[in-house]
Length: 248
Image (cartoon, rainbow, N blue to C red; front, side, top):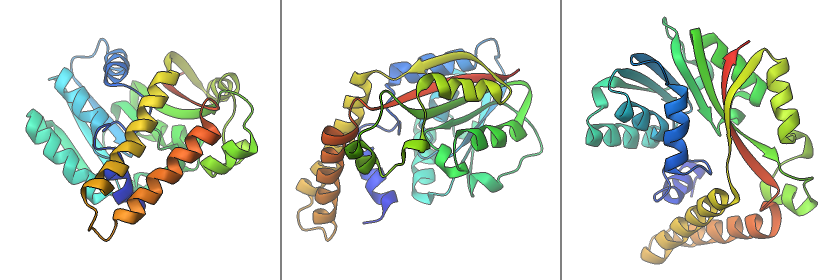
């Protein structure tokens, strides 16, 4: 079972692929689009388009573009947009986010939990800068260390200590790179727990409901492994912050 299929099944009940509730998403989007009735948003790594369709639903004057390499996820984003009646204001592109280009700037550029696609937080912000219209904003979601990671935490995440920093250092690096944080939100422990239990539970439930499927055992094993890595490894160690940024 490939990673994209696992992710699709795991996010059935939590379409936002990050430890952020729908209420928190709505609050962040309201802040990111405040004062702008008409605008353009770009999500570099949009997945199933959860952030964009919510933005378009709340802001009838906005248009949006989503970019992702997962064709199946883009199909589901299109279906969701059609169901919500916002499909005419949403453009979706099956292309590497690093190679996407557009002749116009965007008022809001998003990358939530996909900075790995660009090689880290600062390279992601460099890419976002290239797409930003004058006065535009960037909404970026990134992990950080809540506390010094143990060996079990690093092994569970498949990460190295230097992959992330603590929250203060993370924000300092962003500011030193020429950005001013104008808003931010740190996901709560409850949001993390809800996200991880939903991720592992949705995948495990699919395996229970499809016992004869050739991928059932692989799905069950993936859910069991992920649950163990989280509960016995990085729970309480890995944090997640979503920052709203403007160029300094």
